[in-house]
Image (tube, rainbow, N blue to C red; front, side, top):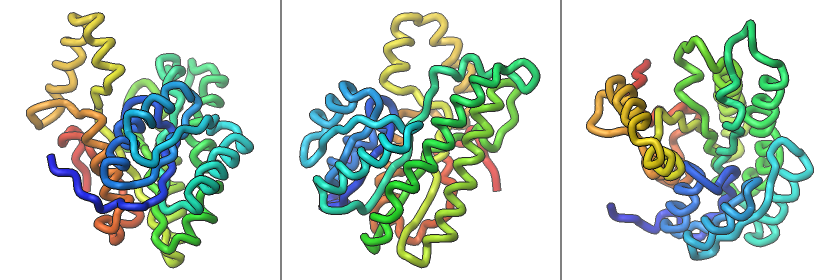
Length: 260
């Protein structure tokens, strides 16, 4: 894979950057020349990612469910870079996803936490970065959503509702601020084998094989997705190559979900 320099000098903040798609995105953006702020509630993990990414990459702590924390992290990035050109809003609380059962039996505290981080938190991040992106003249936001917002499942209603809300938020931003030079798009990943998941698979090979076979049976492709697949799409959407893409949901799933 050839990495170009199309993001040279771009000032970008990634919310949710310590692991998985966010971590891969930080590294990809830095490789393409961007100046990157890696923001995460896991500051140790974000710091490690920033060190591995190199270049002008640094880490800040953020809790995207807390408005003051989001504003502080954004201000740190703006202070360091002198402005912002892009944001990848990727953070999510997946610790509660196994308790996200169904509409009748779900504990509403699980719903509240899911919405607080996976939807309200995305609005807080949007409110923090938009004033800076409009000043840039080439501002771009990429939200991480999910194919779950379009599919139907017997479980995980809270997660799906939050992701559908993220899609609606993206369309609003694209429609409202497009004339001011800001593009907004959604990355909708399919099943992705992250680095953390690979470690879990190594620890439980039999169960991992069952999961891999299950998702491969639903994917018309030769392999399952990896974090780097998504990072490449985020880099495109934050670059000049993606300037004519606005208000789009980009499915990156190997064909497991095909829709008009």
